Image (tube, rainbow, N blue to C red; front, side, top):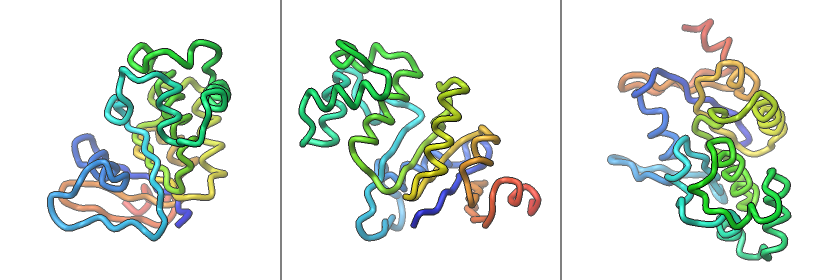
Amino acid sequence: RGEHVALVGFNGMGKTTLARLFAGTRAPTEGEVILGHKVIPGYVSQEISETIPPERSLVNVVRLEDASLTEASARTLLGAFGFSGDDAFKAVGVLSGGEKIRLAFARIYAAKPNMLVLDEPTTHLDINGRRALEEELVKYEGTVIIVSHDVEFVRAVAENIIEVADNVVRKFPGGYDDFRERQ
């Protein structure tokens, strides 16, 4: 609870699969995933179309996460994430990579999760967006699970490391530098 963890390892080792299991978007082939009592996951996939259909409008995406949002309040929320005016009625499929990431975070904000599962969240962010995300995640009181090859981002956000290697998953207490030292 409240832990900030990074999943690290080489490509193809299963980091994304493990993130999807935590987020509840994939069922395990064996065993079961048991989340804590009242855990509400919020998931940002590295492939946005996996979680947000490309034909949906931005305002519709946000309102689906919180049915109590009026159209006006959904548009206000989208405005806080850089979508102004008629942008709210664009289809998700026409957005750039950076806009899709911003929409994914607006969607999570509307859902109010207490566990964030973020798979490569910095991929389409510029340096200012990356820093802003980093700062918000450090302050976030809920659980954060990130998959990222951005070592500086992992250093800034993760308090513990889970290494995903060939048929092995190991947890290391401490940040990224502690993990590297133990290796």
